Structures are given as structure tokens and as C-alpha cells.
Image (cartoon, rainbow, N blue to C red; front, side, top):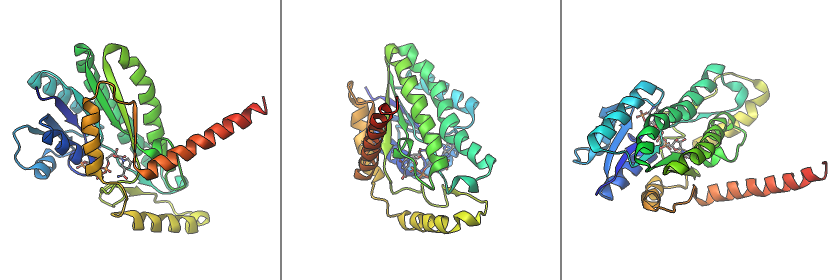
Length: 270
Ligand code: NJP
């Protein structure tokens, strides 16, 4: 029996690759993005692919897509909460509006979709919520403060929510990739701080040169990550977290070491 997947942000990048990998595994996929036409263009005709418009910041639209999917296919077995983007740059160069927009999509939008889908999963005492977080949800750096703040929030929310859902048969997989070759760092998706602050000018110029050099040359292959996620989703004893890529494992490992060190040193001051 094919499983039913609901994927957000499936027009491009990682979401498109996850939807493709699920289709290749024989699953039924409801693939969403802000424009259903963009999703159709990405996939062409496919019997098991159902394109829907879903801007994740629209809670009513999330409820409607979840209800329609559950009604039409009888279940939502796997939700992939993937849609997201980055506000890149130094914190003080962002307006309050830009920071709120980052949280509106990456945190509140992701919550909207989970809130819409969870009741359908709870009813059946079955389902998996895959949340595409980031290694930036575990580690933060200069230039990534605003994006990381939103992904740290996703981590904190989902780590607790997963424990609330587990006794009801609904599982969670948090995915923390390193840098992936998608539109993520490109002007098509990323947005950049707009306030000019001379004190940061040199550091920001270096950061933007790094982003420019990295865009299109990221080490992580989104197809490979998608090909790992689909079999993990089928495993009953799948891990709660999947840190993908040497870069991500190195950064996350260094953060854990640093935390352990700082926790141990804190004991000296008790
Ligand atoms: O980015 P990109 P990725 N409502 O820009 C959609 C995380 N991540 O695939 O614009 C609904 O190629 C957009 O659709 P649309 C990252 O934080 C990435 O890399 O409407 N959809 C498109 O399909 C994000 O959570 C890296 O056509 C919205 C997709 O999101 C996830 O991976 C590293 C939307 C973005 O495709 C996928 O990003 C990492 C909205 N309001 C985590 N806003 C990385 N690439 O390096 C955007 O650790 N979308």
C-alpha cells in the first residue's frame, strides 16, 4: 500500500528532491509550494503527484490542504515540513519587520502545517513528522544570527512537541543538514540585511563574499539527502535526529564539545 506524503516547499531545492524520491519509492505525494503551477512545472505529469498551492504562513490554507489530503487519500502518513528561507547578514542590519518575517515562515509557518496535520495523525495513532531544521538550529555564527534564531526555535518547539506526540503513535524526525546545493543562498530565496552600519562594513563584506563563493558550490547534494530521508521515514525505529553532511557533523560535534566544556566549567562556580 503506498504511503501518503505531504511535502511543503516542493517547487525547488530539497523539497522537490524529497517529493521525487518518495514518488520513486512508489508513494503518493501531495507536493505544495506558494504556487501549484511551480510544483507542476517541477514534476510534469505524474499519476501519484498532486500539486497544491500552500503558503505556509496561511493557517487556513494549511488546514484546507491537510483536510483535503486526509479525506481524499484516507491518511497523511508522512508530513515533510521543509519550506523555509534565510535572512542572511548581521543582526543589526535587519529591520524588525525582516526578523519577524523570518520567524513567520520558518517557525510559525512550520507550526501552522504541523498543527493542521497532527490531528489527522493522532486520530489514526500513526504518522511521521519530518522537520527540515538545519545545523544552524544547533550552532549559530556571525551572519546567521537571525536565521539560526528561527531554526533554534524550530528545534526547541519540535523537541518538546515530539514527546507530546510519541505516546499517541506519531513520530518525529528532525533533520539538520549542512550546506546544500539549492537556491537557499541565492537572491531567488535568501534575503539580506538592509541597514547600513559602518562598524560592521568590513566584516559584512567578508561575509557576503563567503556567501557569494558558497552559492552553487555547497558540498551537500539535496538528492542524496532526499534518498536518505525516504528509507529512514519507513523505519519504525528511525532516529529522532539526522545530522547530514561532514560539515554539519563537524559543526554540531564542536558545539557539543564546547557545551560539555562550558557545563563542566560552570560547576567550578557553583
Ligand atoms: O531552499 P530553496 P532549500 N510557503 O530556496 C519554499 C533548509 N536548509 O531547498 O518559493 C511555502 O531551494 C519555496 O517555494 P516557492 C531550509 O532552511 C537548507 O535549501 O513558493 N513555501 C521552495 O520550494 C529550508 O527549511 C540548507 O516556490 C515556501 C522552498 O521553500 C529547507 O532546507 C541547509 C515559503 C525553498 O527552496 C529547504 O530549503 C540547511 C512559504 N512562505 C537547512 N517560503 C541549504 N540549502 O544549505 C519558501 O541546514 N518556500
